[in-house]
Image 1 (cartoon, rainbow, N blue to C red):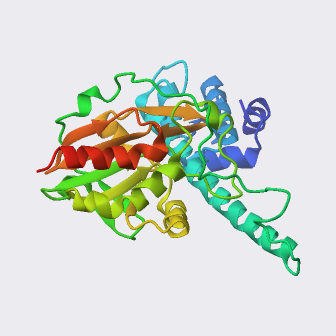
Image 2: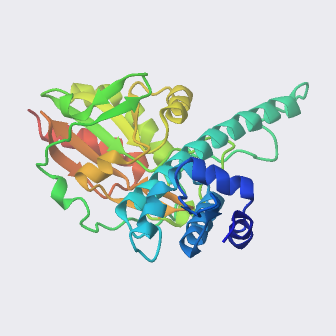
Length: 318
């Protein structure tokens, strides 16, 4: 078939077809007169490129899906390489969402300031609360159950993994030192003016990241005095987002960013999904000389957890 018929059947333009060819994604047969001759397989590949594009996957990254079809698979995502393409697209989308969320928070803050400028009523005193109070803990939150997802962690070596910190440096988890390091892992921290995922309070163990962080802030000196060499918070949020939390809450320790959840893959850490996001379940690791010495899981209530860690350190001195 000719290029115009291929374009019509696949729902694209002839210009798009020529672009796909220039990238080597389509390789039509050449007739004796030099014209391109497309077949049903080319129609299928072109439709696959168009479908992936509607999902936000650039044309240049569709090759694994097309190769999967070419090798005889029924679907373009039947191959492992295609799944990697999905994951990369999701990671990029998550980063964009977090960036837009941060911009939204800044806009809300500017709106609040502008709306109350010249008024005797401050944003904090206004009758309409546009900000969610993330520092409080509702009384009727569901309690997470121990599903056994962290049993295997005790005595496990920490992987050779570098994570970006809010201090602007990379932290190697297997090089934290011979002493004890507290790493509390949490789903995500809320930010004033930014909506939490739908149904957040109904997810067991989800609510309470900000109170937990404040608890470790308030007990920080006590944790060091009880034998901890350091404290880190860790989530799948970007370091730039975490940095705002560190500054706003005046945290004396750094947060570690793991947007690809690489630590979850290395250690088999428990996660959960909501609103299109995959987030860490709340747990805390006590790491000593590169080995997980103790695990707190599940963690509840989050606002009292730092005190629980402090008690354990005092009851288990080195």
